[in-house]
Image 1 (tube, rainbow, N blue to C red):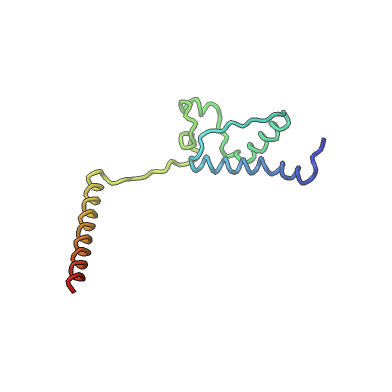
Image 2: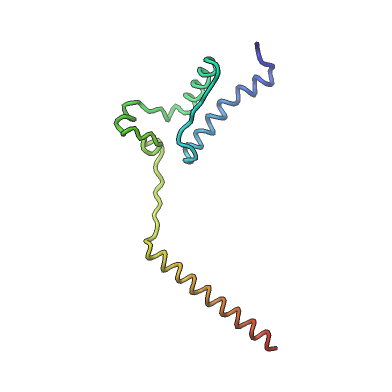
Length: 121
């Protein structure tokens, strides 16, 4: 039968909320795929309609997926731009760590000197 009004409203809000969350999770690379299961055909139709509405700009023709070697990542399908991060060369990183370590040792020595002078008084 029909759901009581408050429960019907809760049911109606789940799919859009889930669709929005999934889109955000895909964008943030938290998830890479989703399996959506339902126990009734009507729910499957409603879910498909909701997801089509929220993810319309992410629909990709099958030919593009095939031509892309079945790479279905968002960046592979050019739905988002891949993030490019540039890191310093390993030698630069090691030099930076060594310089910081040297400064730490200098500070430790300064603290020891202060403690010794404080104990002499």
